Image 1 (tube, rainbow, N blue to C red):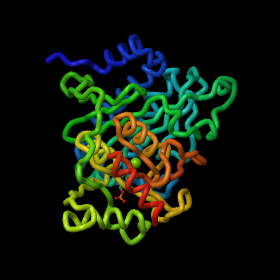
Image 2: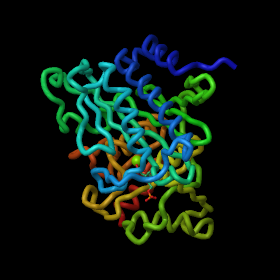
Image 3: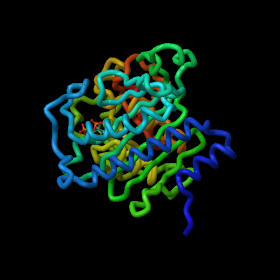
Amino acid sequence: MKRTTLTRFLIEQQRHENALPAELRLLIETVARACKTVSHSVGKGALGEVLGSLDSENVQGEVQKKLDVIANEVILEANEWGGHLAAMASEEMDTLYPTPNRYPKGEYLMLFDPIDGSSNIDVDLSVGTIFSVLKASDEVAGRDVTEEDFLQDGRKQVAAGYAIYGPQTILVLSVGTGVYEFTLDREVGAWLLTDADMKMPQGKREFAINMSNRRQWSPGITRYIDERVAGAAGPAGEDWNMRWTASMVADVHRILKRGGVFLYPYDDRTPGNGKAKLRLMYEANPMSYLIEQAGGAATDGFIPIQDVAPTALHQRVGVVLGDKAEVARITEYGKAN
Ligand code: AHM
Ligand code: MG
């Protein structure tokens, strides 16, 4: 079977759909190439001496894994010289990374989580890379990029995607014209289209949440999950299944492919005030963009994630995403309780 390569897909998007400026195409190709390098490092494991933690912590006080830092470097190096970016920001860096002066400054901004699901690295479970692309304002051509330039709501994203380093290495991508999946042909080194215009199945009775946090959930989340756990005999009237990979890329990918709902909620009822784990700019926004493009929904438990006004680069947010009806039900329970 002759499959479409990522390069051809992007050129066709540029040519026919008029959806893709040349610089954005270059950016996506560059990110995809960097993900191949990251995939190679992840795959080497102990043989590449890439497992384990460093002594350092990131800006959020989390211990950095060796692969967090390796993948961060790979993505920065791949993208700094191509002339398509004005600056980058990463979950693993305190502040933004402007395109060095020796290279031309482009018109896009990219945010990324180099290795999502880091706690899985050392035990050989799926991890991934998540990225989000924004357009910089025209004025950045004549001045330094600031953190404020990145603080655009999720609706302004012009592209987003993730790579999963699992049994297969997969790239899932949207440039605003649907969601497309590419699988890495490891022998040839090419990304090949394996699922086009993906639509997430609705009505699947499966939820994903870290149940050990139950004591700190809001009443609405507790009610929703308790009802599912009660199964056919309870108010949900049906038995439900549960999965939790502790790797957002893997959990969201499963939901995209076979349906269900993912929750990493605020542990307090007040939007913005409660503590949350996932990051708005590096995780929640790009995943919400993809899930909405695939016919699902994504809220912070109250309002659509992509409408949340960002106030800081490393801001955290509650995340409820996936099946449209279930996301609506959770939001309703949140209001009622
Ligand atoms: P990371 O980017 O530092 O790896 O953290 C994000 C990950 C998500 O991939 C996942 O959904 C969540 O943290 C798991 O958290 P927990 O270990 O609390 O279940
Ligand atoms: Mg992450």
